[in-house]
Image (tube, rainbow, N blue to C red; front, side, top):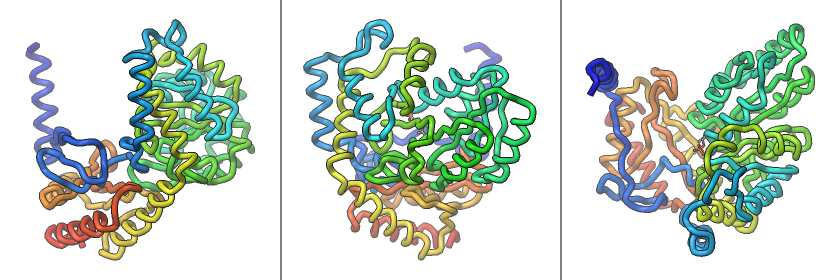
Length: 395
Ligand SMILES: *Cc1c(COP(=O)(O)O)cnc(C)c1O
């Protein structure tokens, strides 16, 4: 190995180890269910984004198998060359209908959707205004764009309005206001009504990344735009199919003109191949299940209420979460890593989350319940949280 490279890497890795947060991912040996085998142990899974249990839903799995048999293993080309299959268009139609928008365009992942949608639309002379806790893929989309950037304090819409007002005094360019719908580290939610009002006051374009909102918030899981009832005036909704949909892929739901613009200009769409048939078909089936089997969404919320109240009753600091994501804020990174390890030793997996994902002193373990957890799973998990909490002096 190049000596300079080796010296650099050794220092980086030593720094992670000295902070007590060097961890390679644990290995899942079963499907992503509510109870899994991981690193050779049977555990209760509290770190999956498979909110509704759709990764293993029989209709979703069957759709994937059928599509491989009929359409083969891969798409054969980038979509704009020869890789757009009828399956892709069917999925986009279903997504648009589920979200009540004119159109949808599917990307390989939520990450590439954000990078493509933000960087393609926003040019030199434009401005992107972003919540300070927005997802890394939004931030990377901003970095790839030549537009100016401004950041408003987390959920602080007075600050957002100030920034917009100041910007409009100077500029007649496009302004994009972008926020996560549900924030992945804290489980709190953007107030889309407040964002829309600020956008309308200052002629800005509202965009939400509903990766953790879709399948979770709104009627039947239609997302935060539906939850806040702003659908008729909201321009851009991003989402992923790797979370509640239980599969893989990103999308933008928007007006037809915007979809057509992205289909001609967004670089991740133009220069990278799209989903293989099995994935597209599984995504379509997942949307259909969400529309026809509302019980999963209902159970997700029953479990959320039960588990969140349980953690609070035990005296844990669960922050401002109003979604199935409930952080248990511990303190330093080393302490949160230890907490996560102790949980694992007793049969619960809740991932430790450290800097740079969150501020060092707000290191945490993050819990996410699923519709398919039983009451017994959650009671057992609460018992283990209580034991570890007392052992480490967190409660
Ligand atoms: C997970 C996530 C993404 C990325 O989605 P992938 O499909 O996994 O690439 C984007 N934005 C937010 C807010 C997310 O939580």
